[in-house]
Image (tube, rainbow, N blue to C red):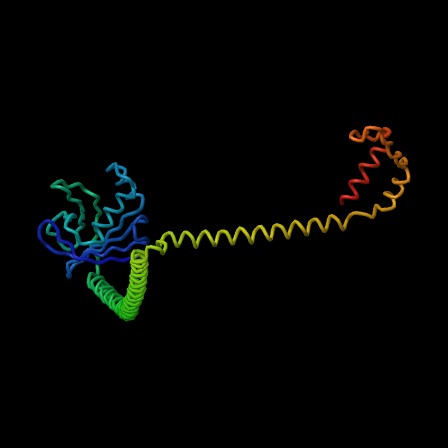
Length: 309
């Protein structure tokens, strides 16, 4: 059961205490009202069907209507206004409580509820005071719990701030060390550059003083040419060695062809007799060689090839 108690002011300027009891916080199941001025008390009830009918008559969505109704009955806001009929009320008579919403100098009625006089208003006032005390106690407990949580959060905040300060200090020290290393490396490079520049200047001066000596750039070119010549010579030597190795492998793979060569020599025809000398000593006759058949010619070529190898 949800319960709200707050002070309301009616149009006549009088103040009353209004208690609202509902099964749900949004008042969608209906609610009960208790109105008292401390001496007298009046009670009324509104059903869920009455709420839907009111929303339909006002041509409003039910959710919007319930939000405005909850703001009027459970919250002390200046945009809502209450009125009693008759006013001022008398003991023992029935009252009608009307609640309205004021928006931009325009007011429209959210609803009204009839209130019946309570025969024992003292007990109702007593129950109202007890509920206020219980509510006050629960609010104090909630405030105390929130205060403890706030203290825990405050300590966590201080701890996190201290850690952040340490991290920031370490980051700054790290950046300073890196910057110092960068400066040292930069200075070293500058010093090396100056040494190289001085060496180049000295070489230029030596070359200008000694005309027979080659210039610095020419000397460097000659050194590079010598290095390239040595590299080419080494490459050619290694290439020749590799070629010799390949030839050795090829020769080692060849089979012995000596018997075949001997057999082919047996097939050759005998050499022709030496030519006869003629009476004219200045002229020599060319020896006539009988023609060879194709098989013998092929044998001679093969023998010559193997003899070369």
